[in-house]
Structure formats: C-alpha cells, structure tokens
Image (cartoon, rainbow, N blue to C red; front, side, top):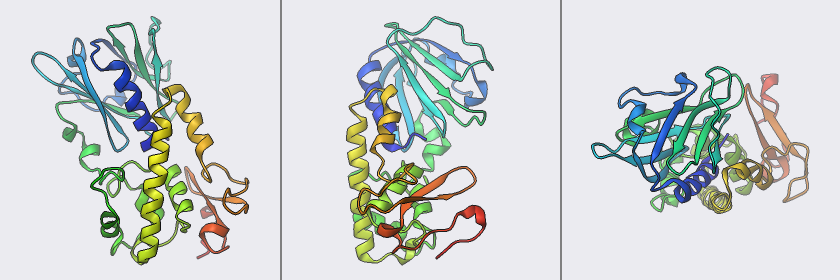
Length: 290
C-alpha cells in the first residue's frame, strides 16, 4: 500500500509535470471508484492545474476554471497506483475489462491512469470544491512531518490511550500518513514492541519513538521525491529494514526477522531488538505471547 513517502513522491513528481497544464479529457472506467457527484467530474475538463499537495495518503490536484476551482482528489488504497505517460495511449478504455479506474489526459499529450490490481476494489477519487468536503481528509489526524508535530504532540496522543502502539501509528484519525509498512520500520528503529500499550510508554520510549518516526519518514520522503512513479514501489521495498523481510537477518543485530499474520496483512519485527527476545505468536493461532 502506498504510504506517506510514496504519496509525497507522487505529489512531487506531479508538481513538476502537470502544474500549468490543462485537463483535456477525463475517462472513468470504474464508476464505483468515483465517490462524489457534485461538482460533476466533467467540471475538470478545460480546467488548469494550479497545484498538487498531500493530505495524509490523499493526493489533491488543484485546478482552476473561470468560474470555479475544483479539486481532483484520490486515495490509492491497498492496491492502487498511478501510471504516468509522457504520451498518453489512445486505446479505448473498456469498463470492467481493465485495471484502470480513471484516465486524465492533459493538453500537452501527457497524462496518467489511476489503476488498481486485484478483485477487492478500494481505490477512490473525488471532485470537490474543498479538501474538507472529503470525509477521509476531514477525519485525518496530524501529519508527523508537519513542523507543528512535536515530541509534545506525540506525548499527548499516547497519553491515556490503552491501545497497542502499532495500531496507534496506523490509525489515520490519530496520526496521518503512516501505514503497515512504515509503522514496522518506525517501531524497529525505536526498538519497541508493536504490542506495547501507548499509555504505558515511558518518557524515554516516547523520545525514541518520536526520533524514529521523524527520521524514518523524512529519509523515505527524501528518497521517494527523486523517483518517478514507476520506480517508487521497488524503491520502497528495497529501503525496508524489517517490513516484508521475514526470514532475513535483522540489519541491526543479525537475528531473524519474524512475522505475525493477520486476516489481510502481516507485521514484521526483530525479537532481539524489539521484544527482549520474546516471540510474538501468530494471530491465526488465536493467542499471543505477551
């Protein structure tokens, strides 16, 4: 799933490619992915792109017309991606026969598709007068790379919250932009169990978690912002220390990276670095080792 660094990489790429261009055509192949009806998606045609920004994991493309300033906003969900073309193909998009959800054609002949693999379709796009009109954006918690997100902000978030810290990091309404992969990376750098209760974190643990969060995300954003969309997924996988590396040696201590499996995903961790050598039981066995 694209998370904050990859989404920011897409934003940086689009800022350099589409700002100032005019939207020539919008082709919707998966009408279920379009989550709004007012303003209509046709409002985007002949609008000029004036900016691109990120809200959590949402990409917000600002456009301008003589009469309005519609926003084209999308969320790539678990299996979505953006496919960029310097010269957009002229092939006909057939709804139900393609992974493409929507195609945006620009005035210079370039453009992009939003695509989604698999059968579970969660990708969403919106046309809105304001980002605040999109419920998922309105519910977002603070962004951990915002200058206003301080160590005190994090301390306030975890105080009294009797929830596992892994879940806190992943909850977009609590902290925006971090998902399954980077929460694994942050917790590994912080040398913290994913099952540690947020409310029980000591001052030293909060210090470590804040430092790990800001350093991990800032480094990943810097790396992602230099790459085109086609390279971002592979670059993310190569940059992971523990996530997706089950059975490989921990880069810190050499112990084996282990997994805990859930219904539709998994987490990875190092027992030596994070849990004092204790193994976390597979959730599919309906028990946990505390």
